Length: 575
Image (tube, rainbow, N blue to C red; front, side, top):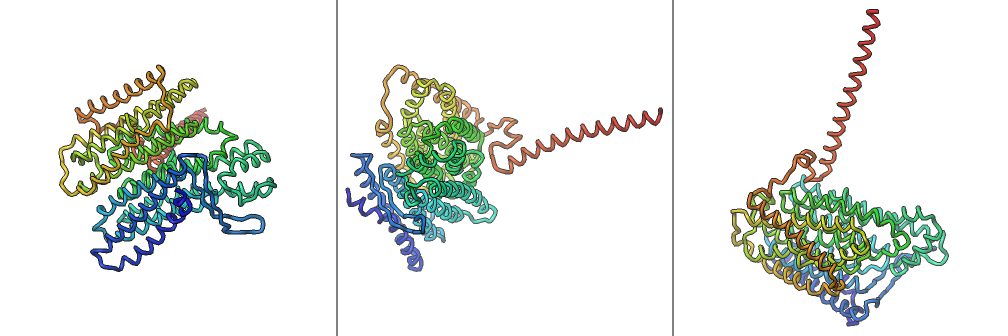
């Protein structure tokens, strides 16, 4: 297995060479060039998947093993910037997950875009995207990670812009580009601040050792020279950068702009870039927060509040992709909270499960949109094919953490919260789970209860969906390696209460579906402030209405004062 580790650099630069081959292949015979483009891209990802699995198997025997390689990149007088590779169990796990999702999406994209004139350009951008993601996951220092995050943002802008044909709709891609740019600025500012304090206050560490393995020592040195409040403000930039990428309120506008993007892009961007990369980066820089863990206490409640709002918005939404995006943002926020609470293994398992689940759901969403001429209104679409419908049901059950996707992980977290007497957080987590279950099965019953049926245009999509569904079921058998099995009476009671609440949510959605009431779930308050969209215009609309009310109050008061003055003047005239 050391062969894969010693030659890991192959999977970094192979996508670059594939991009050049596709570029020149674009001028070849049209009937064969598309097959060659797909084949070499698939082969590149397959090689990466085999290498990542080989490295992961090497680290299973000893999870503490690491392999690191450093090359001096930009030497200066006082410091230097190195280009390096860090291979450990965490990076191999995320690499395996990324390449697996990539292989599935490539198979889907080949048939989805076979008649598209920009077929070759899509796969060129996809290979550049693979290069940037792999380089980020194998980075061994903060500066290198920041550089590749900026590159990922630029490539994703091209990737997302590929799926739009009109200027008005393509302008929405600027939202996510600008928000990710803001995240990169926060991360870069925090790194520059670390460099400044290293060079001015620490005599033992230079910039060349801004490695992830040296972060505990760097944090200790900086924390000893600056005040606690200043250090908190410094590390807050890291948190802001991660929160922006996760799409927490008020930074959710970027992910929502993906509601009209093609499923080839959204099925890989939302699970990988919005969830996996921020979680991976947060785990890497976690030693920075070891001296100020109290910063998470207030942050967790704010993130959970965002998760509740997203789950409620998913309940009142009538657009298929928006429902899935809201559910994704709600689940991603919960994963971040679980990681903040210190449940590292459970958070990793739920992250892997959610990535596979949302890839499956977005692929099925693309299947529905493909068969209904890209209309995503839930009033007019249906999922009636047996195999995709069954796969969709399994994905919904995984999303609700019912028997798949982290059931025992969440129950063990609830058990620990109950032992720690953190009742409020326990209740809120179960409330979010109830809302997500309600929104998920609402979507299932809406798609199942329509009158229109599919034609036979979508047989090619069943293979990727079936493979993802089988892998999701297969993943549930490995949950015991991520969490401890508990057999106490209290744990069994928590599990039964959780199942009762979620079954109750399913029963409610079923009863509402029998009454055809699942589409029009809009109370007057939500209709007035349009919280089901949560775009910037809606917030401006809210402030505008508040402003008008205040103006009316001020005008009434000023009119009353003016009227009193007139009355007083008239009285003086009569006197």
